[in-house]
Amino acid sequence: MRHRKLRRYFRHGTLTQLAVFEAVARRLSFTRAAEELHMAQPTVSIQVKKLAATIGLPLFEMAGKRLRLTGAGRELYAACEDIFLKIAEVEERLARLRSPANGTLQLAVTTTAKYFAPRLLARFLERQPGVDAGLTVLPREQLLNRLAGGLDDLYILSDPPEDIEAAAQVLLPNPLHVYARADHPLARRRRLRFAEIAGEPFLLREPGSGTRRAVEQLFEAHGRAPNVRMELGSNEAIKQAVLGGLGLAVLSAHSMAPGTMHEGIVPLDVQGFPLRRWWYLAYPEGRAPSPTAQAFLDAVREPGWLEGLAPAAAPLPAASAAP
Ligand code: PGA
Image (cartoon, rainbow, N blue to C red; front, side, top):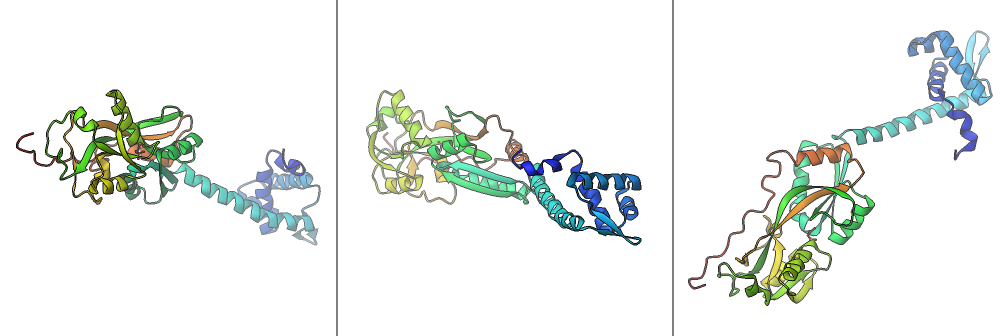
């Protein structure tokens, strides 16, 4: 035990004895305390005697016919308030952990999930307004580190992590399209073969990004490497670079979510696209989700819960007369 001097207090029943003592000290009567506690008076006396024996000092004395606290009794009575207050505080915090309605929920999501995760969380908070929620948006590599350390309740990322023990459930589709500026010569072509776009300059996300990995895997599968025009650290910067005419980009359709600027950018009609990827909700394996996190995991499985969060099929620009 860390606190050797406190060993005597860790006997079975000390807390009960303290509760009995507190009632006697407050009422200054064994009889009234026994009534309050619904206990027999001899039991109350025994409990107080045991406590006095544990402490090694008398707690009460008689002043004529009246019961009064000794010096030790007064010290202990004052401490009782602190002890019970501390226990009440702990209990309040634990109650928050026990109840999904009042718990906390810390969600961490990868960069591209920021286009839908806040709306998803908002839906949950509409049902559970008492939940104290937080949302962190991080590059995928940092997110994987946090997942490995189990720092947050739930994680949203596309493709479950390969080398981290994590439980994951499918959340939403994450279709990836090839995007170009609307006036790009390929924008009006139909059923483009991969070979027809593969030599174009491409704008890639930063190393470690899930979107970038999907692009690299695709080129690898075709035995090629992308012609990288530029690396940019965010979907928004890539969209601006596409608008600037710097090249093509493979992006999640979520990055064109309502409210994000995408005028002047169009998806190309390329065979094999959109690439079909999925968003997952994950949490560290071997750790039971908190009741609040579990309520979130259950909610997203409810029919209709995710309605409107998957990106709508991307409208293609009008086809050219002679593809
Ligand atoms: P991102 O995509 O890392 O490219 O933002 C999310 C993911 O693939 O996990």
